[in-house]
Image 1 (tube, rainbow, N blue to C red):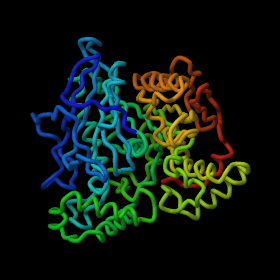
Image 2: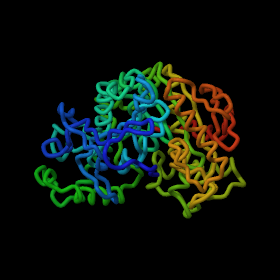
Image 3: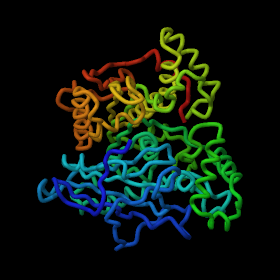
Image 4: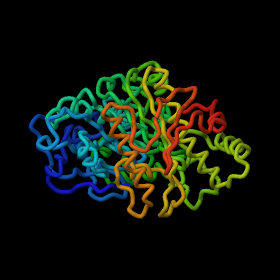
Length: 470
Protein backbone atom coordinates (compact mmCIF):
# COMPACT_ATOMS: atom_id res chain seq x y z
CA UNK A 1 0.00 0.00 0.00
CA UNK A 2 1.60 3.27 -1.09
CA UNK A 3 0.97 6.27 1.10
CA UNK A 4 1.50 9.47 -0.85
CA UNK A 5 5.28 9.95 -0.87
CA UNK A 6 6.69 13.39 -1.61
CA UNK A 7 8.42 14.22 -4.87
CA UNK A 8 11.15 16.55 -6.05
CA UNK A 9 13.87 18.39 -4.16
CA UNK A 10 14.40 18.40 -0.41
CA UNK A 11 12.13 20.93 1.22
CA UNK A 12 11.42 22.60 4.55
CA UNK A 13 7.90 23.65 5.41
CA UNK A 14 4.80 22.89 7.43
CA UNK A 15 6.97 22.03 10.41
CA UNK A 16 8.97 19.37 8.55
CA UNK A 17 12.41 19.21 6.95
CA UNK A 18 12.66 16.57 4.21
CA UNK A 19 15.98 15.28 2.88
CA UNK A 20 15.63 12.68 0.13
CA UNK A 21 18.00 10.17 -1.43
CA UNK A 22 20.83 10.23 1.11
CA UNK A 23 23.39 7.50 0.36
CA UNK A 24 24.47 5.37 3.32
CA UNK A 25 26.60 2.88 1.34
CA UNK A 26 28.63 2.85 -1.82
CA UNK A 27 26.60 1.65 -4.82
CA UNK A 28 26.62 -2.19 -4.81
CA UNK A 29 27.64 -2.39 -8.45
CA UNK A 30 30.78 -3.27 -10.38
CA UNK A 31 33.28 -4.96 -8.08
CA UNK A 32 30.85 -4.52 -5.16
CA UNK A 33 28.00 -6.37 -6.85
CA UNK A 34 26.58 -9.16 -4.64
CA UNK A 35 29.03 -8.19 -1.85
CA UNK A 36 28.47 -6.93 1.67
CA UNK A 37 27.75 -3.19 1.75
CA UNK A 38 30.62 -0.74 2.05
CA UNK A 39 30.16 2.56 3.94
CA UNK A 40 29.58 5.61 1.77
CA UNK A 41 32.56 7.85 1.12
CA UNK A 42 32.61 11.12 3.01
CA UNK A 43 31.27 13.96 0.92
CA UNK A 44 29.14 11.84 -1.38
CA UNK A 45 26.22 14.09 -2.36
CA UNK A 46 22.57 13.26 -1.84
CA UNK A 47 20.20 12.82 -4.76
CA UNK A 48 17.84 15.52 -3.42
CA UNK A 49 14.97 13.48 -4.80
CA UNK A 50 13.36 10.14 -4.12
CA UNK A 51 15.92 7.38 -4.75
CA UNK A 52 15.30 4.57 -7.24
CA UNK A 53 13.68 1.46 -5.78
CA UNK A 54 15.84 -1.63 -5.38
CA UNK A 55 15.76 -4.12 -8.24
CA UNK A 56 12.42 -5.95 -8.39
CA UNK A 57 9.98 -7.25 -10.94
CA UNK A 58 7.01 -5.24 -12.15
CA UNK A 59 8.18 -1.83 -10.98
CA UNK A 60 9.59 0.97 -13.11
CA UNK A 61 12.73 2.94 -12.35
CA UNK A 62 14.52 0.28 -10.31
CA UNK A 63 18.29 0.22 -9.93
CA UNK A 64 21.02 -1.85 -8.33
CA UNK A 65 22.31 1.50 -7.05
CA UNK A 66 19.64 1.62 -4.35
CA UNK A 67 21.24 1.97 -0.92
CA UNK A 68 19.72 5.28 0.09
CA UNK A 69 17.48 6.59 2.84
CA UNK A 70 15.01 9.43 3.23
CA UNK A 71 14.88 11.66 6.31
CA UNK A 72 11.74 13.45 7.52
CA UNK A 73 12.70 15.60 10.49
CA UNK A 74 10.94 18.17 12.65
CA UNK A 75 11.79 21.66 11.42
CA UNK A 76 14.10 22.96 14.13
CA UNK A 77 12.96 26.53 13.55
CA UNK A 78 9.35 25.74 14.41
CA UNK A 79 9.57 22.63 16.64
CA UNK A 80 12.64 23.45 18.70
CA UNK A 81 16.12 22.01 18.78
CA UNK A 82 15.29 18.53 20.02
CA UNK A 83 16.85 16.05 20.42
CA UNK A 84 13.95 14.10 18.99
CA UNK A 85 13.31 10.34 19.04
CA UNK A 86 14.05 8.50 15.81
CA UNK A 87 11.90 6.02 13.89
CA UNK A 88 13.64 3.91 11.22
CA UNK A 89 11.10 2.29 8.88
CA UNK A 90 11.89 -0.97 7.05
CA UNK A 91 9.44 -1.57 4.21
CA UNK A 92 7.77 -4.87 3.38
CA UNK A 93 7.27 -6.64 0.08
CA UNK A 94 7.95 -10.35 0.55
CA UNK A 95 11.75 -9.80 0.40
CA UNK A 96 11.42 -9.18 -3.34
CA UNK A 97 9.52 -5.88 -3.57
CA UNK A 98 8.76 -2.56 -1.94
CA UNK A 99 10.54 0.75 -1.49
CA UNK A 100 11.30 3.33 1.22
CA UNK A 101 9.45 5.78 -1.00
CA UNK A 102 6.14 4.03 -0.36
CA UNK A 103 5.52 5.98 2.85
CA UNK A 104 5.74 9.65 3.77
CA UNK A 105 7.48 10.16 7.10
CA UNK A 106 6.16 13.71 7.44
CA UNK A 107 3.20 12.40 9.43
CA UNK A 108 5.62 11.41 12.22
CA UNK A 109 7.95 14.40 11.81
CA UNK A 110 5.06 16.80 12.44
CA UNK A 111 4.72 15.20 15.87
CA UNK A 112 8.35 15.56 16.92
CA UNK A 113 9.90 12.37 15.53
CA UNK A 114 12.77 12.03 13.06
CA UNK A 115 11.41 9.43 10.64
CA UNK A 116 13.91 7.67 8.36
CA UNK A 117 12.81 5.29 5.60
CA UNK A 118 15.51 2.87 4.45
CA UNK A 119 16.16 0.88 1.27
CA UNK A 120 17.84 -2.50 1.21
CA UNK A 121 18.67 -4.95 -1.57
CA UNK A 122 15.87 -7.30 -2.57
CA UNK A 123 15.50 -10.74 -4.10
CA UNK A 124 18.64 -12.40 -5.40
CA UNK A 125 20.60 -9.17 -4.86
CA UNK A 126 19.98 -9.21 -1.11
CA UNK A 127 18.92 -12.74 -0.14
CA UNK A 128 20.80 -15.25 -2.35
CA UNK A 129 23.94 -17.11 -1.31
CA UNK A 130 26.24 -16.42 -4.25
CA UNK A 131 29.25 -18.28 -2.87
CA UNK A 132 28.49 -21.61 -4.66
CA UNK A 133 28.58 -19.68 -7.95
CA UNK A 134 31.12 -16.91 -7.31
CA UNK A 135 33.41 -18.38 -4.66
CA UNK A 136 34.09 -18.07 -0.91
CA UNK A 137 34.53 -14.28 -1.05
CA UNK A 138 30.73 -14.15 -1.38
CA UNK A 139 30.00 -16.21 1.72
CA UNK A 140 27.03 -14.94 3.74
CA UNK A 141 25.71 -12.99 0.73
CA UNK A 142 22.25 -14.37 1.53
CA UNK A 143 22.28 -11.83 4.36
CA UNK A 144 23.39 -8.84 2.28
CA UNK A 145 20.03 -7.15 2.88
CA UNK A 146 20.38 -7.53 6.64
CA UNK A 147 23.90 -6.12 6.44
CA UNK A 148 22.49 -3.23 4.42
CA UNK A 149 20.09 -2.45 7.26
CA UNK A 150 22.81 -2.70 9.91
CA UNK A 151 24.98 -0.28 7.95
CA UNK A 152 22.00 2.09 7.61
CA UNK A 153 21.48 1.95 11.38
CA UNK A 154 25.16 2.75 11.89
CA UNK A 155 24.70 5.75 9.57
CA UNK A 156 21.81 6.83 11.81
CA UNK A 157 23.97 6.59 14.92
CA UNK A 158 26.65 8.72 13.29
CA UNK A 159 24.54 11.32 11.49
CA UNK A 160 21.06 11.68 12.98
CA UNK A 161 22.08 14.48 15.35
CA UNK A 162 22.42 16.73 12.31
CA UNK A 163 18.64 16.39 11.87
CA UNK A 164 17.84 16.93 15.52
CA UNK A 165 17.62 13.22 16.27
CA UNK A 166 18.69 11.42 19.43
CA UNK A 167 20.80 8.33 18.57
CA UNK A 168 20.06 6.86 21.99
CA UNK A 169 16.32 6.77 21.23
CA UNK A 170 16.05 4.84 17.98
CA UNK A 171 13.05 2.65 17.24
CA UNK A 172 13.18 0.27 14.30
CA UNK A 173 9.90 -0.78 12.74
CA UNK A 174 8.53 -2.61 9.76
CA UNK A 175 5.54 -4.33 8.25
CA UNK A 176 5.34 -7.80 6.66
CA UNK A 177 8.84 -8.72 5.41
CA UNK A 178 10.05 -5.53 7.10
CA UNK A 179 8.70 -6.81 10.42
CA UNK A 180 10.34 -10.19 9.86
CA UNK A 181 13.63 -8.35 9.30
CA UNK A 182 13.05 -6.51 12.57
CA UNK A 183 12.94 -9.93 14.28
CA UNK A 184 16.21 -10.88 12.60
CA UNK A 185 17.85 -7.66 13.79
CA UNK A 186 16.62 -8.41 17.32
CA UNK A 187 18.68 -11.61 17.26
CA UNK A 188 21.93 -10.15 15.88
CA UNK A 189 24.65 -9.19 18.32
CA UNK A 190 26.15 -6.57 16.00
CA UNK A 191 22.81 -4.75 15.80
CA UNK A 192 22.24 -4.74 19.56
CA UNK A 193 23.56 -1.21 20.30
CA UNK A 194 21.89 0.39 17.27
CA UNK A 195 18.28 0.68 18.54
CA UNK A 196 16.28 0.80 21.75
CA UNK A 197 12.77 -0.18 20.68
CA UNK A 198 11.07 -2.25 17.96
CA UNK A 199 7.72 -2.23 16.15
CA UNK A 200 6.54 -5.33 14.29
CA UNK A 201 3.40 -5.12 12.17
CA UNK A 202 2.25 -8.40 10.61
CA UNK A 203 5.62 -10.12 10.78
CA UNK A 204 6.82 -12.40 13.52
CA UNK A 205 9.95 -14.50 13.52
CA UNK A 206 10.35 -16.03 10.10
CA UNK A 207 11.60 -19.56 9.53
CA UNK A 208 15.06 -18.61 8.30
CA UNK A 209 16.89 -20.86 5.87
CA UNK A 210 19.60 -23.23 6.99
CA UNK A 211 22.75 -23.29 4.87
CA UNK A 212 21.76 -26.53 3.10
CA UNK A 213 18.38 -25.16 1.99
CA UNK A 214 20.00 -21.89 0.98
CA UNK A 215 22.39 -23.84 -1.25
CA UNK A 216 19.42 -25.59 -2.88
CA UNK A 217 17.85 -22.20 -3.59
CA UNK A 218 21.07 -21.04 -5.22
CA UNK A 219 21.20 -24.15 -7.40
CA UNK A 220 17.57 -23.72 -8.41
CA UNK A 221 18.29 -20.13 -9.39
CA UNK A 222 21.45 -21.07 -11.29
CA UNK A 223 19.48 -23.65 -13.29
CA UNK A 224 17.53 -20.73 -14.81
CA UNK A 225 20.68 -18.95 -16.06
CA UNK A 226 22.03 -19.24 -19.58
CA UNK A 227 25.58 -18.61 -18.34
CA UNK A 228 26.32 -19.57 -14.74
CA UNK A 229 30.06 -18.92 -14.87
CA UNK A 230 31.38 -16.18 -12.56
CA UNK A 231 32.17 -13.98 -15.52
CA UNK A 232 28.77 -14.55 -17.08
CA UNK A 233 26.98 -13.81 -13.82
CA UNK A 234 28.91 -10.62 -13.13
CA UNK A 235 28.28 -9.44 -16.68
CA UNK A 236 24.58 -10.33 -16.70
CA UNK A 237 22.19 -7.42 -16.77
CA UNK A 238 19.78 -7.02 -13.87
CA UNK A 239 16.70 -7.70 -16.00
CA UNK A 240 18.01 -11.13 -16.99
CA UNK A 241 18.79 -11.97 -13.38
CA UNK A 242 15.30 -10.88 -12.32
CA UNK A 243 13.77 -13.07 -15.02
CA UNK A 244 15.70 -16.06 -13.62
CA UNK A 245 14.59 -15.11 -10.10
CA UNK A 246 10.92 -15.09 -11.08
CA UNK A 247 11.24 -18.46 -12.82
CA UNK A 248 12.93 -19.94 -9.76
CA UNK A 249 10.42 -18.60 -7.22
CA UNK A 250 7.49 -19.70 -9.38
CA UNK A 251 8.84 -23.25 -9.38
CA UNK A 252 9.99 -23.37 -5.75
CA UNK A 253 7.76 -25.67 -3.66
CA UNK A 254 7.22 -23.22 -0.77
CA UNK A 255 6.70 -19.56 -0.02
CA UNK A 256 9.63 -17.13 0.29
CA UNK A 257 12.63 -19.10 -1.02
CA UNK A 258 14.56 -15.83 -0.81
CA UNK A 259 14.92 -14.88 2.84
CA UNK A 260 17.60 -14.57 5.50
CA UNK A 261 20.05 -17.41 6.09
CA UNK A 262 21.06 -18.80 9.48
CA UNK A 263 24.79 -18.82 8.87
CA UNK A 264 25.92 -18.74 12.50
CA UNK A 265 28.19 -15.79 11.73
CA UNK A 266 25.95 -12.74 11.39
CA UNK A 267 22.61 -14.40 12.04
CA UNK A 268 22.25 -17.08 14.74
CA UNK A 269 21.09 -20.51 13.67
CA UNK A 270 17.82 -19.87 15.52
CA UNK A 271 16.29 -16.42 16.02
CA UNK A 272 13.93 -17.02 18.93
CA UNK A 273 16.48 -18.60 21.32
CA UNK A 274 18.86 -15.68 20.68
CA UNK A 275 16.12 -13.23 21.63
CA UNK A 276 15.09 -15.34 24.63
CA UNK A 277 18.71 -15.45 25.79
CA UNK A 278 18.63 -11.68 26.29
CA UNK A 279 19.79 -10.05 23.06
CA UNK A 280 16.94 -7.53 23.43
CA UNK A 281 16.96 -7.37 27.22
CA UNK A 282 15.72 -4.00 28.43
CA UNK A 283 14.34 -3.05 25.02
CA UNK A 284 10.69 -2.31 24.18
CA UNK A 285 8.54 -4.10 21.60
CA UNK A 286 5.19 -3.18 20.03
CA UNK A 287 3.97 -6.14 18.00
CA UNK A 288 0.77 -7.43 16.44
CA UNK A 289 -1.16 -8.60 13.40
CA UNK A 290 -4.41 -8.09 11.49
CA UNK A 291 -7.32 -10.48 12.00
CA UNK A 292 -7.66 -11.63 8.38
CA UNK A 293 -4.12 -11.18 7.02
CA UNK A 294 -4.19 -13.79 4.29
CA UNK A 295 -7.47 -12.66 2.79
CA UNK A 296 -5.26 -10.35 0.72
CA UNK A 297 -3.60 -13.31 -0.99
CA UNK A 298 -6.40 -15.86 -1.11
CA UNK A 299 -9.08 -13.48 -2.36
CA UNK A 300 -11.88 -15.21 -4.26
CA UNK A 301 -9.98 -18.51 -4.06
CA UNK A 302 -10.12 -18.65 -0.24
CA UNK A 303 -12.27 -21.80 -0.22
CA UNK A 304 -9.84 -23.76 -2.39
CA UNK A 305 -7.28 -26.20 -0.91
CA UNK A 306 -4.12 -24.55 0.44
CA UNK A 307 -1.06 -25.68 -1.51
CA UNK A 308 2.55 -25.82 -0.36
CA UNK A 309 3.59 -22.70 -2.27
CA UNK A 310 1.25 -20.62 -0.13
CA UNK A 311 2.75 -21.80 3.20
CA UNK A 312 5.50 -19.85 4.93
CA UNK A 313 6.37 -22.27 7.76
CA UNK A 314 4.38 -25.52 7.65
CA UNK A 315 4.43 -28.37 5.19
CA UNK A 316 1.20 -29.07 3.32
CA UNK A 317 0.62 -32.22 5.41
CA UNK A 318 1.18 -30.32 8.66
CA UNK A 319 -1.19 -27.57 7.59
CA UNK A 320 -3.92 -29.99 6.53
CA UNK A 321 -3.71 -31.59 9.97
CA UNK A 322 -4.14 -28.14 11.49
CA UNK A 323 -7.13 -27.45 9.26
CA UNK A 324 -8.83 -30.57 10.61
CA UNK A 325 -8.33 -29.23 14.14
CA UNK A 326 -9.67 -25.83 13.09
CA UNK A 327 -12.83 -27.41 11.70
CA UNK A 328 -13.46 -29.09 15.05
CA UNK A 329 -12.80 -25.85 16.92
CA UNK A 330 -14.96 -23.72 14.61
CA UNK A 331 -17.64 -26.13 13.28
CA UNK A 332 -19.91 -23.40 11.89
CA UNK A 333 -17.19 -21.40 10.16
CA UNK A 334 -17.03 -21.52 6.35
CA UNK A 335 -14.16 -23.23 4.55
CA UNK A 336 -12.97 -19.88 3.20
CA UNK A 337 -12.94 -18.28 6.65
CA UNK A 338 -11.16 -21.27 8.20
CA UNK A 339 -8.50 -21.17 5.48
CA UNK A 340 -7.93 -17.45 6.03
CA UNK A 341 -7.81 -17.81 9.80
CA UNK A 342 -5.48 -20.83 9.86
CA UNK A 343 -3.14 -19.41 7.23
CA UNK A 344 -3.02 -16.08 9.10
CA UNK A 345 -2.04 -17.97 12.24
CA UNK A 346 0.59 -20.01 10.38
CA UNK A 347 2.36 -17.02 8.84
CA UNK A 348 1.70 -14.04 11.11
CA UNK A 349 -0.25 -14.41 14.35
CA UNK A 350 1.44 -17.34 16.09
CA UNK A 351 4.97 -16.39 14.89
CA UNK A 352 4.37 -12.92 16.36
CA UNK A 353 3.32 -14.46 19.68
CA UNK A 354 6.48 -16.55 19.67
CA UNK A 355 8.58 -13.39 19.21
CA UNK A 356 6.71 -11.77 22.10
CA UNK A 357 7.32 -14.84 24.27
CA UNK A 358 11.03 -14.87 23.48
CA UNK A 359 11.38 -11.12 24.06
CA UNK A 360 9.60 -11.36 27.43
CA UNK A 361 11.76 -14.31 28.50
CA UNK A 362 14.87 -12.33 27.54
CA UNK A 363 13.93 -9.40 29.75
CA UNK A 364 12.13 -7.04 27.39
CA UNK A 365 8.83 -5.15 27.63
CA UNK A 366 6.07 -5.91 25.12
CA UNK A 367 2.70 -4.52 24.03
CA UNK A 368 0.60 -6.78 21.78
CA UNK A 369 -2.31 -5.89 19.48
CA UNK A 370 -4.64 -7.24 16.81
CA UNK A 371 -6.40 -5.05 14.25
CA UNK A 372 -9.99 -6.30 14.03
CA UNK A 373 -11.53 -3.28 12.31
CA UNK A 374 -12.57 -4.41 8.83
CA UNK A 375 -12.47 -2.51 5.55
CA UNK A 376 -15.81 -0.94 4.67
CA UNK A 377 -15.01 -0.63 0.97
CA UNK A 378 -12.90 -2.26 -1.74
CA UNK A 379 -12.31 -5.86 -2.82
CA UNK A 380 -11.66 -7.01 0.76
CA UNK A 381 -14.69 -5.36 2.30
CA UNK A 382 -15.51 -6.88 5.67
CA UNK A 383 -11.96 -8.11 6.29
CA UNK A 384 -8.91 -6.80 8.13
CA UNK A 385 -6.45 -7.90 5.48
CA UNK A 386 -2.66 -7.83 5.24
CA UNK A 387 -1.34 -4.25 4.89
CA UNK A 388 -4.66 -2.73 6.01
CA UNK A 389 -2.91 -1.48 9.18
CA UNK A 390 -0.63 0.82 7.17
CA UNK A 391 -3.47 3.20 6.42
CA UNK A 392 -4.14 3.58 10.15
CA UNK A 393 -0.56 3.94 11.35
CA UNK A 394 0.52 6.33 8.57
CA UNK A 395 -2.82 8.19 8.56
CA UNK A 396 -3.61 7.50 4.91
CA UNK A 397 -6.85 5.60 5.32
CA UNK A 398 -9.22 5.94 2.38
CA UNK A 399 -11.69 8.79 2.66
CA UNK A 400 -14.38 6.26 1.74
CA UNK A 401 -13.97 4.53 5.13
CA UNK A 402 -16.57 5.56 7.77
CA UNK A 403 -15.89 8.26 10.39
CA UNK A 404 -15.43 5.61 13.10
CA UNK A 405 -12.50 4.15 11.16
CA UNK A 406 -10.88 7.57 10.98
CA UNK A 407 -11.22 7.94 14.75
CA UNK A 408 -9.36 4.64 15.09
CA UNK A 409 -6.80 5.88 12.54
CA UNK A 410 -5.92 8.80 14.83
CA UNK A 411 -5.83 6.55 17.90
CA UNK A 412 -3.49 3.97 16.37
CA UNK A 413 -1.17 6.62 14.97
CA UNK A 414 -1.04 8.42 18.33
CA UNK A 415 -0.32 5.15 20.15
CA UNK A 416 2.60 4.51 17.80
CA UNK A 417 3.87 8.07 18.36
CA UNK A 418 3.71 7.63 22.13
CA UNK A 419 5.62 4.34 21.91
CA UNK A 420 8.35 5.83 19.69
CA UNK A 421 8.73 8.68 22.18
CA UNK A 422 9.46 6.15 24.93
CA UNK A 423 6.05 6.13 26.58
CA UNK A 424 3.56 3.25 26.84
CA UNK A 425 1.38 3.14 23.69
CA UNK A 426 -1.73 5.15 24.49
CA UNK A 427 -4.20 7.51 22.84
CA UNK A 428 -7.33 9.42 23.73
CA UNK A 429 -10.32 7.08 23.58
CA UNK A 430 -8.31 3.85 23.90
CA UNK A 431 -8.59 1.75 27.06
CA UNK A 432 -5.41 1.38 29.17
CA UNK A 433 -3.01 -0.93 27.32
CA UNK A 434 -1.14 -3.18 29.78
CA UNK A 435 2.21 -4.80 29.08
CA UNK A 436 2.04 -8.27 27.62
CA UNK A 437 3.06 -11.34 29.61
CA UNK A 438 3.14 -14.97 28.46
CA UNK A 439 0.50 -16.10 30.97
CA UNK A 440 -2.28 -13.52 30.59
CA UNK A 441 -1.32 -12.25 27.10
CA UNK A 442 -3.29 -8.96 27.35
CA UNK A 443 -3.99 -7.89 23.76
CA UNK A 444 -5.36 -4.61 22.44
CA UNK A 445 -8.09 -5.45 19.95
CA UNK A 446 -8.33 -2.39 17.72
CA UNK A 447 -11.89 -1.81 16.57
CA UNK A 448 -14.54 0.91 16.53
CA UNK A 449 -14.72 0.31 20.25
CA UNK A 450 -11.28 -1.06 21.10
CA UNK A 451 -10.95 -3.45 24.04
CA UNK A 452 -8.20 -5.28 25.88
CA UNK A 453 -8.66 -9.04 26.25
CA UNK A 454 -6.61 -11.41 28.34
CA UNK A 455 -5.78 -14.86 27.00
CA UNK A 456 -7.66 -14.14 23.76
CA UNK A 457 -8.33 -17.04 21.40
CA UNK A 458 -6.72 -19.45 23.86
CA UNK A 459 -8.21 -22.59 22.31
CA UNK A 460 -6.95 -21.62 18.86
CA UNK A 461 -3.46 -20.83 20.13
CA UNK A 462 -3.24 -24.24 21.81
CA UNK A 463 -3.58 -25.84 18.36
CA UNK A 464 -0.06 -24.59 17.60
CA UNK A 465 1.63 -25.58 20.86
CA UNK A 466 3.82 -28.25 19.30
CA UNK A 467 4.64 -26.46 16.07
CA UNK A 468 8.11 -24.95 15.62
CA UNK A 469 8.17 -21.61 13.82
CA UNK A 470 11.88 -21.38 12.95
